Length: 270
DNA sequence: ATGTCCACCTGCTGGC
DNA sequence: TGCCAGCAGGTGGACA
Image (cartoon, rainbow, N blue to C red; front, top):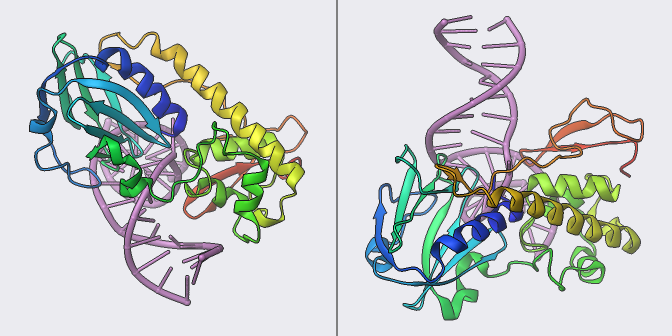
């Protein structure tokens, strides 16, 4: 699931359940995702009060009154379940609040991670070092993008997936943004004109905003039993549409780059 | 430094 | 119906 919009949706869904609440129980059921959980994760969470929730790139942030932030990444298959009726396989971490709410972090493929890090020095959290600008923030714009891509010969698609260039895009939204900007995913990043980079920045904004808006509509129903955060049905223009017609009269094609499927229309994306 | 590929892990789907 | 190859939205490390 989780690119930036899914993580943002997840954080927004967790906020009303966790913010201001005391964690009365934190149960680790399987401590080894991509990286092992901190040894004492359960003890360090139990009794803490959650002061704020946030997001950086594709990471969710849960601040506590003990000066620690729980940083979680959902990998490929991770998601939080709110008030599950019963626990399921791959519910690796279960948190209960003083208000009687229960959260389960489920991640079948275990590419995700959970870490505790001092809130005051989150910038030093190793995965955050070297991270590029937030795609919806002011530091991601045509000028900064042009500077970051100058002279680069790798494909523009690969550069959008590089979290050091821009932090939060994944395969789906990189593909969708390039389609909307009418830029070929195969084009060498350093050869994309400033004018077309401006179009790309705008397309990234449009695609992410629409996805977050669609996720938001799902969040409103989060309280349903076994509600799972971050899942929503957004209409995608090209992703997963190999062989289907493009509005321009062309046909959507697929190729693999770096082991990732890329969908595009060779007729209108140049 | 840069570009490219692959491993990590489990579950689901579609074709035979 | 059953089996199995192929595929899945991320990241980081190895290699040239």
